[in-house]
Length: 429
Image (cartoon, rainbow, N blue to C red):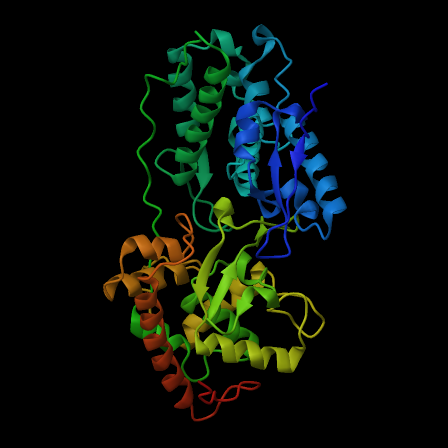
């Protein structure tokens, strides 16, 4: 009798103490799914299987493989509700729960990135603006274009509060980012329905989507970035280290506080970005892959190196690089609050510019572009495109960052009264 193929193989990589996984059709999954899981890293497991990403031995790797197969089989289960009974409301609500979303299931099965934040946003839209609308009571098979037009009109005329919560002024939802996102969400849901119902006429297919609302964030100038590291701006070592990671390595907040000591290569020097906190701004956050599930390398400038060394001297070395003495890492409110303080202490005038913590990444990108660095490599540095093992042009990026780093060190050494817990860095390289 011919030998039955194994449902998977989990070979150990020769160049590291890690395992790879390849699924075979004998595991019961479609062949196209198995092809997408050929020679993949265990780090590519979806967030729901985060505990299986680092098997320590062959047995653990096999157990992780079985967990992945069961997860993917569950994601393949088709919608069992008869087409004629599905209302718009029932269909839209499916996309607000990760375990029920048809699109999330398809993306997970294809090992394509999806965002937990996006699912949370869909739930907010459904709860705040869609629930109770008569459009949701219609059956999916009966919705026509005039119904969709009337629905869009009702959503556009919803009233929203302007400014902060104390402001009683109101305006229409139309023309806002929220309106654009809501309509985009509904159109996506109808598009997903069309994929699984051949011959069905999508009522949104003839309607143009809302014009995109400009959502660009502004950036600091080079001199403003340097001023943030000037006298009496950063009050302690944690502030210095976090600011350096934001402005000189281009890391997202969820990536900064997910860094572990083994991610730092002091010889190259580089930072390997391979994990991040998902849903970072909420208590429900959990550890997972970076945005887009793409590992990348970031510069590790001497300013950031010395800040981390000093931080470990003061607080000790813990599981995460940026930890307080008790082992806990700063949260989202810590960064938001101190970011505003840094701007005020540095005397930076915003003059109507939209500046938020994420603007640090925009500032780094603008600085590099001004110095002639290719946009393609800037995107790679910030994690916006596929990671390549070696990029020769990245050396010019490193040189630019080192140049700015020298300016920052000069500004720090000119401080008449160094902030508490920060010693003036001495050149070690």
